[in-house]
Image (cartoon, rainbow over all chains, first blue to last red; front, side):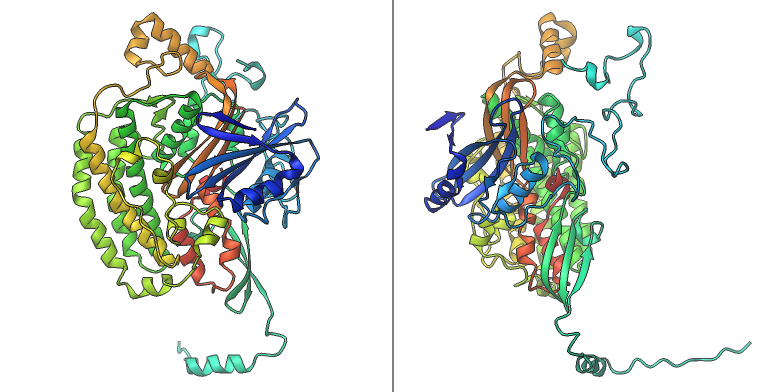
Amino acid sequence: MLSEFRGEASGVVALDKIPEVMATLKSEGFTYLVDITGVDNQGEDPRFEVVYELCDLSKKKHLRIKTTVAEGEPVPSVSAIWRTADWHEREIWDMLGIRFSGHPDLRRILMWEGYPHHPLRKDFPLAGLPTEMPDIAFTAKAPLEGGPFVTSSATLTQDREPRAHPAEERNL
Amino acid sequence: MSSTVLPISFGDAVARTAEASTNLSADDVGEKLVLNIGPSHPSTHGVLRLVLELDGEVITKTDTEIGYLHRGDEKIAENMTWNQFVPYTDRLDYMAPLANNVAYACAVEKLMGFELPPRAKVTRVIGCELARISAHLLGLGAFAMDVGAMTMFLYTFTEREKIYNLIEFLTGARFTTSFTRVGGQIRDIPPGFLEGVSEFCAQFPAQLDDFGSMLNRNRIFVDRTKDIGIIPADVALDYGLTGPNLRGSGNDYDVRKAFPYLDYQSYDFEVPVGQTGDCYDRFAVRMEEMRQSVGILRQAVAKMPGGAWQVNDPKNVLPAKDKVLTKMEELIHQFIVVTQGPDAPVGEIYFGAENPKGELGFYIHSHGGGVPHRLKIRAPSFCNLSILSNLLPGHTVSDVPAILGSFDFVMGECDR
């Protein structure tokens, strides 16, 4: 059940078993929840992955628990087990749009309330998307394009440096 | 032209207070006032916004609003090669850019499976500890200034200046260092640098004693920090607090001891912990940590080994610049590493480093190749601030700057 990579143990747990497994692990010594991360594997089914990093401070052990979740499906919240999970889960909802059932206060945390997108999804472009507040979320081209320190393009290749291509050309 | 003098009566302060309290109507009692602090307020050290609900002067509810400095660092990371992201790590905890560079490079090296040569490790330890002292000095100065001891700020900045000079000597930049690359650093330590560090170590502890004596018998400072903002050890851990904020509560978790990286297990240093977990303990822990860092610096300078300062993996590590300009092979490697990035294996890792603010972690999910599929930054300030809505209620408004100052957070890292 546990896989190893670079000396770290990872385990995969079914979505509905998460609260039960986490409560057991906490009672077995994994008292410190380091982090929760959401990963967008667009094109795969189920689409998202939620990764929990746990730490046992007395035995100096690290453990990673992963679960997969489909789009629109809620993940059971672990904020009742570790209060630090509260903000991590809010961040995942904000950035990836994964809902957590049983979370006491699932609001956006980094973006503002009412922002329509989830920026860390793979289908969200790097340059941003238009919103109703254009002054805040500007939708200009990629940040370097046309900036003050970018070499302007010249007809002769020898006269210009090879950088600052438009985003669509730049798929190396 | 004659002027008339209008006498103004202030009355007796005690009598006025008594009058104000007797004139309270039943409606006023229990009436809540919502007070907004920030996002731009001197005591919020950046752009943190606190919405406080007050009953008189006592806080009854707190809502912590973050995100004003959100730049989408994690999204940016998914769109660039491993080495291109290094400058962005400068801007996480911008009080200790060098420590962030090291933590990020170590994380990618863990993914790549690199084992650094001893000289690179010791160089990085020196960088980390210099950054720790510099960050703690700023945190200390700003904290003291927030609670009414202005002098400290100027003293700590004098010392920081010396560290900045050393960092400039080492990296070429004072602030945004971008010193590390995957598999090593941008260059070897310059001649004369170790002597500079020794010189700093020789004079700094005396300064530190001065700072201590300026604060730990300062009546205003002690009154405003002792028994204020007490966090029990189990609550601190429950909220994911790390660094001096956790150790101030008596928990001795230090990544350098628990999960040693860069051979920290071979250095002799102690992990200071507090007793009660109040603002004063967090201050005292930082003071002692600086002393321990000086000890680590001395040991690192004494044992600096010679030899390679980069991993020997030409296909993934940037070659020496002079060879790039004269040798074919190195030119090809330079081209590949710069344009495509070091070729990482498929896999996922988590690497945590003990930064000045706490455990800075990087979770990297790689699908192979030169760019991460997902890079998550576990920012210590983010977790540290999440406790505020639990901690602040019950304190008065005047305790807020003391508690925020003792937390020593950085919004650049919190909002990413």
